[in-house]
Image (cartoon, rainbow, N blue to C red; front, side, top):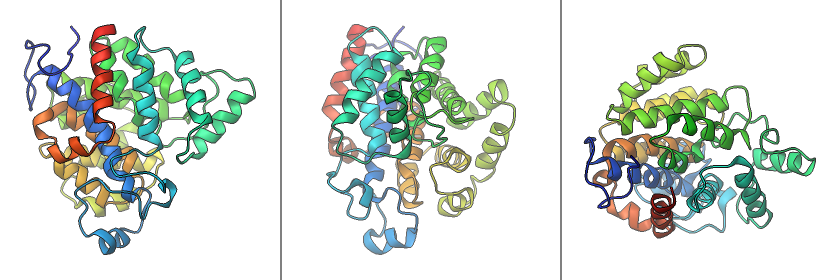
Length: 323
């Protein structure tokens, strides 16, 4: 049974924040919110600069400090969120996820894209131009930004785990094909499914690791993240590393999910206050905690501040209709 949107289905098990359709919708919106909140301070590694300019950041902002995103407006996305929205648009028309179709949409989109183009995007474009296909064009990047786009696929395939795992692997591989990054996509997809199925985020992290990823480096990354739940987030994330690479971003994301599993708003704020690649961390943290809490725990100001909110909800409705 597909979960759908709030008010369209009423049956099913109950999650932390409400029924299953509510939580599936909030999973997607919370992931996009994680990116939009990060836009104003994305890739600011010196947290004292954030403090001096803004104090405590609790809302969406235009990127005055985030020079890579100049020209963006408050409530808009980094390149991660923009590509996640493209993914949502591509699958909303029906027919499921097709990596070749997504690749065609992505290449058309990138031709006129005015936002920041990271190295993974540039390398992937070069590989496409050299004749590679969607399965082989991806860069060797191991940045978390590749898997971070996945929330729309979990919405689409929430009741088809096999199709979901294949889809999140392929959408990640198209641009990010580093040694572990495709497996990272599977890890957080399985975690999100477990949370939608009623597990707490921390339990889901532990169970997915034990059942599917009980090996290095995942056991180490999950262990470090869980062991740090008693540590201030800035301190913990600085120790892991604030950067995009999965070796740092994975345990940092586990830390945020586990430390704030009962406080979605605090998780999102502490993520951006920790600096660095807060956008990718925020998208995955938001996805997992949004799946747990439902719409009730997402601050109204963040929903109304999300520039693409109505577009996202419309596309989710299309998925419900088209399947």
